[in-house]
Length: 71
Image (cartoon, rainbow, N blue to C red):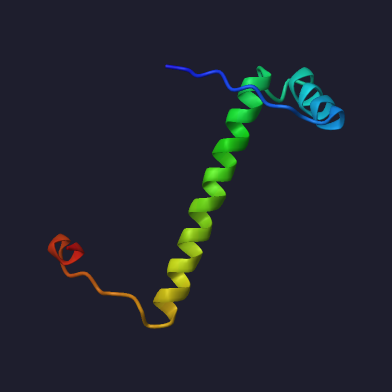
């Protein structure tokens, strides 16, 4: 199921989105924004992974010997 979201952009940003679509980079404006959200989510995940790596390097990690250790 899809939901419609209306957004307001400055003219320059609107032109950039339209240019990306016209150049064939995206099939539609909606696809452009879906891609931006996917990239944002990937960035959030990367930040979480990097934070976890810092914690592990600081000795805050836990060695798991089985899935039961997750509890």
